[in-house]
Length: 296
Image 1 (cartoon, rainbow, N blue to C red):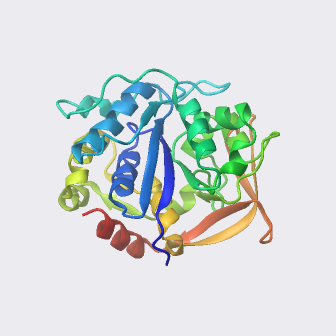
Image 2: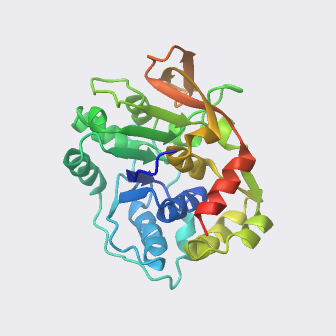
Image 3: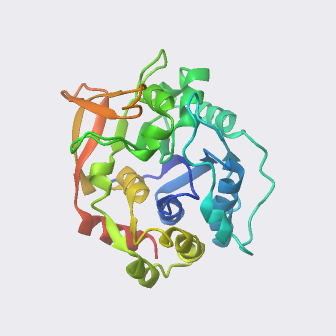
């Protein structure tokens, strides 16, 4: 396994499901991650930026740029208008002065400054990416790797939250449009990520690392209506550095943009030349061993 550092941009809807905050803690702890910036999307994007700032500041990483992004979807009404976990921000030190809607331009400039070097990890609704790729169609080809927590590909045909929240942006991100294609395009779908799950009491007992201290507070908001933490986004983050945690299939992913299936993803299997790679299985024990080895 290479020990080379990887430049990462992290696009997130931190503040809804707790797994975004856990993924950020992983990236901050991963010695091979050069985190170039964090961008937030969907409702109350500026409050979401504050949540990211609280985690970064707690471990002395105020140097990481954080930008609030698109608070609305491209054409449909968003399904998550609030960042519920902001209720737990309390006295956690953080930056608060985030201008609105600066994420897309920040991403565009950063990618153009590092052509062929950046892995763009997106784990929320894909509005920021959809707008970015539409405004600057060359951007996907300037990435090193596009990694998504998105879709459902192998079990019952239903939608997945990130893809459904902005189906038109999801379609753009998977190549529907005139934009270029990324050299590598990998998705971690819901049918695989749900296999990495931990009960709330185990989270409380095992989340002892300093970087996870604010995350524990945010998690209590999540645990008011959910009995466990599913590591959707952390698995996608870990896959950048330890891809052998999963097995993969290749093919062409298409995305529905019409009701009642808007945001549903379909994988048409193909060969090695296919544009999309999709995780089809995971070794949960190996994932958790890796996660806690890094985040400690």
